Image (cartoon, rainbow, N blue to C red; front, side):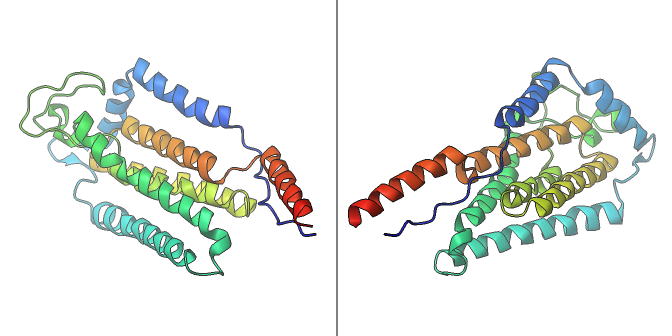
Amino acid sequence: MSIASSPAASRFFDFRLGFAIPLALMALLLAIDPAGLDFAIARAFYVTGSGFIGRHSFWLEDILHDRAKQVVIALGVVAIALFLISLVSRRLRSSRRHLGYLVLSLVLSTSVVTPLKALTAVHCPWSLSEFGGTEQFSSLLEKRAPTEKPGRCWPGGHASAGFSLLALFFFLRDRHPRAARIALAIAFGTGTIFSLGRMMQGAHFLSHNVWTLLIDWTICLSCYRWILYRREIDNENNWAIQSGKSVQET
């Protein structure tokens, strides 16, 4: 009599808090307009007459924006390639579910940005009259003033490239907890640096990037709960079913 091994249970995660905290913060951002703080921070990076201090910075535009984003894209390409290989490779078969999770989380976290930008039409700081532009400011839920150039600045596209790396935390947490904690720090750090760089260029307000973090966290956590998370009771049920089949076979 043989019993097929079932996947190990996941380390406990409090999904109630995991979802409740970001959703509560989203509600708070909708209830309390963050424009005051957004403008105060933006003005710290703005010089009257010359614009935002990082607008034409080689390091912020070419290195931190273009090259850094290419690194994240390359990571996504590698993840997709490994997932496709896992479909035919016995060596990677045991990691197929995890690789599928990683691909889905990275793709959703970054691809959701473009339709949201088109839907909300929020302008960048550099486009606003308060910072040398011509557009009128409006908060996220307000009606936009008539314009020939709708905004495309909410949520933060570059920030999403950094915060999408939160997927690595969930990808690693059940198998390699220590590496997962490092990945979590890297994801928060990368997203924060990407966000700060674009704020210095006048491309985003702080709240744009906070929204991006909350959206990406929710996406990565949802995919983890759906694809990877296994409760102990699930494994006990699997064991019982497999045991019953094995007994009947004997």
